[in-house]
Length: 283
Ligand code: GUN
Image (tube, rainbow, N blue to C red; front, side, top):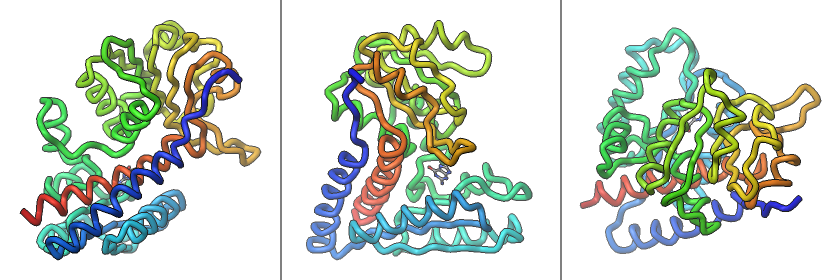
């Protein structure tokens, strides 16, 4: 392997330590304890793992945290009522509704019901729109975490070719906008793209599609910085990303491992968004 590993776990621990210090200051100087309310509907097993990690991180940095865990039979009106209650609760600075929601619920309507200033995920259309316009916005946690990882390895996107594989509202689209804001030349790929040809152009490659080892090592431009957002469990139980790791690591200059790359950063940036919401609320 020639690439250096990007240790997301270590960077995330540093981000959380910075947050913990700020929380202590906020408590001491202004008597404010940031509060994060997490809503998990039903029994999606992956959601349970993610939410447990988020609650643990929140407690560790000194936040108040609450998990609301309605049954999967909750109606749209009942879930909206819960969101409205959290919107009005002054102890709650950040609200997160874990996705996916059961099929009978309208996730877009639920996300839009969260007050934009309490939208810890950065998924509200107001925040997504402000990001598009280059205005101050709460940023989606995963792409925000990726930007921090790039910074940590001294990778300045300005003037570089950045290729984002995947166009989800949660990662691909906001990632492209954040890279554009940092003056990268950005290409967004999807299922109709000529993936090998596009990937070969990338100085910075971010892959977020949820297809195990879709991106082949042989496609990677020598010296590229490779960020793998994927987390897939193979039939043999092994966790792999969306990039063929060993072969990509032969060509990349830096690469994120799976697990221990982007994943821990998502949670760290969620804490950052919640802290910033509490700092604003106290003003
Ligand atoms: N489901 C998968 N990733 C996320 C995330 O970052 N936030 C929420 N709320 N749900 C998710």
